[in-house]
Length: 634
View 1 (tube, helix red, strand yellow):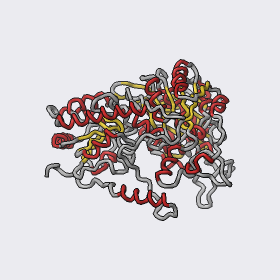
View 2 (cartoon, rainbow, N blue to C red):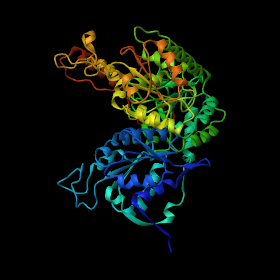
View 3 (cartoon, rainbow, N blue to C red):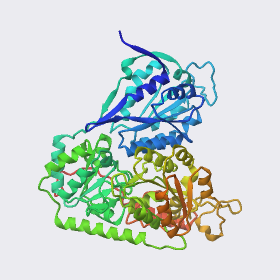
View 4 (cartoon, helix red, strand yellow):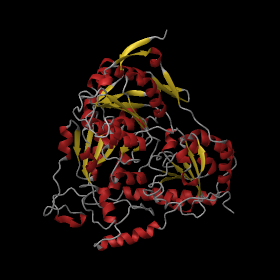
């Protein structure tokens, strides 16, 4: 007779999560490190009660539902997708607050489990507080909004449905190719209902993460393509880091002489000081990577999904005979740009490909060109770091100070605004986790919550969060979470008087920074940067705000103050916020890159008309990459 145990649906869910493990390369660990949650009607008597009676499954209190999903996402990213956190909310706005976090996780291909409360299945008390009503169906709630941003979605309308739903949820969460947000909508009455579950369902389960190999013939073909290329270039994406392929990448590069450009997610794949490390590529790329990308006849994409930033809106690769080899666990990404697809784990694939390339090396002239560009870029970084811009320091100088005086073994966290582009270019990544940037969704508000997740995942490392004034105002509440949990972060708040990134974008489109500065309206109308010194800025006291949430705060006026603050923050034991104002207009150059943002075709503004002409000119450089050629010399 099958042994059974009577549990509520919520108790069964948490019991199951406790028993889930992952294993890769012989290393086994629990998949879930706990649960963030805010309780209310919808989950208090279900998931809340279950967590209360199972303290061994760690519960963390959050301040904002979106933020707790960001924390889980950052945790999973730091753990190379081998471990994550669950997040639970009440029904209604608590649930929909998590949708932005779900999109962030799914777009970045990072596993998080979302457990929002849902409407009553028994319906007799409907409409309940915060219920979305429909005249066409009663089987709908706000949680249906999670469907397009979840890799797996289910509504558990009977307790026994967990028996089939949870294994599928874990299959997706632990899949290198399919992972992202998984949402299980949990009706609040069903959460509290008991069922006699088979005890075998709660036995330890190990999900083994395979290192899949690509097709042997495809590998041989790829090796032939590489041998035939005159100017091959690697584009390293996040998959290099997630698969822990950085060491084999270094060996591959040193054996073949093929230089490496990095996407946002792939930064840190190769140490910044390696002579064949070209650094950032694409719309936020530098002069080294972008110049070699322009003429490359073979692009080897490793673990990249080729976002428009990586390809500079498909203007980066201009060689008319360029072709692509894509190494990726996801077939969908491996086929992009009409590539020769190598569908497999990055580390395993590079190992096998390297064996097939024994004796191969790029022409010495090409290697010399790549190393010369590496050195030229290093000199340009030094120039930007030493600008001594007045009266306010430039953003490049502030990055340089963190790079120079911060912990070389630490982790830097950022997500949105003008900082990601400048960091992608300038930051000198010394290890694979040195640069933690959420740029798949570029989600404002990720920064501080993401820093929490990083620190929880890597408590031994110093974690520094860079956040702009715009993102800080959007989601600063998890400073209090850090204080409550005793988590030490360094939060560097750069005040540039508004939305610097879209201010620059607006000006480039001839719109003068309209609606991007934090200023008082003139005659009831918000103005842009063109208004100059006639505007009255908002008097926002960021330091006082951070202190009110319990953080230690250091206010800086000069660059020297800032350098001293970095040292003080490193020495501190508690979360420390450094506040400094920087120049809104001094920017790091674009280095022969472009990003496609359409400009109005008809406008009364001459500046917009001129921007439209430039946009139309640049658009002619956008390419499709159809029609692979078997021989580049044909």
